[in-house]
Image: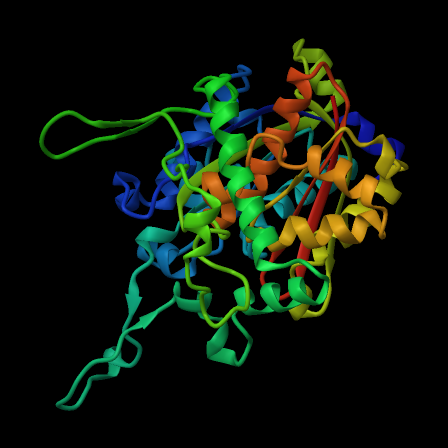
Length: 407
């Protein structure tokens, strides 16, 4: 999708929860309940009634955690959030791309004239994912029970795929992106986030909504900020051991496994004008791609090229870039590909990418991360007085998604 027609689709509300540490109080909150919080907030901020939303698409990846609620998280979340029984909804899993895929599916409905108001949701709670005990349903003989941890390698090894930390690290090395460069990017992500938060760029009422967690005893827990950002140094990062046998990827240049949710409300320009709403951003283009599973660090560059072409925009026209830091390798490899050997251009791309930090600092609740980079791009463009931006994200086994926004 792209071109002139997409100029008539606008984002009017976007919000996310804080993203958690692995050992947070959020670890016990069902991802469905995290989604309920942002779904309610997204419509309330612009006085849209739940029954006015035509379609809700909901991205989520941690199937083991969702299994604790059994089924159809989108349907459950929509009903719990107060949306009427007649609201159309669907749950989808396109790995880390999922919540941006949810935006793209809503765009299709809007452009086809099947809807006028849509919501895209992303939610996951990685710390809550349980261990699995296959075979117990049919009984076990005397002996030990073996548990499977779906978070280990994210399960890719079960069907013979390499852990994508290995793929990303090896592809990074092949593109001349060293471990030291990845550690430097990770440190920059932490430092940029710290500066942005100190400047008030991550605050309740804008990108963030406060999460209130009831307790059986005592006062509820109030979470108002992302929990994972930390102080570090190149020396400390250099001491960390690579994971899963990757040549370069370590816990320091990778994001934390997190809990979190985000929601984006978007509609036709006609609806926004009718309601007197000032858009957060105009959606100029949206694309999905896939490539060889090994090329996960490359796919953000490919999707950026494709979405810019569809939107009729040149890379030089772009003011801000968001590339999800599934690992530091992803923005580093993708920006190098986009620069095509031009060192001055590469330096300029580094300066305009993830300007307020990224997932290495903030966290990566996989189903919600694409919604985060999209809404953060819109808010930052607005703070700067407008402009063009592109957000891109990789997903497991070589998937990708990207979106162009104008403010």
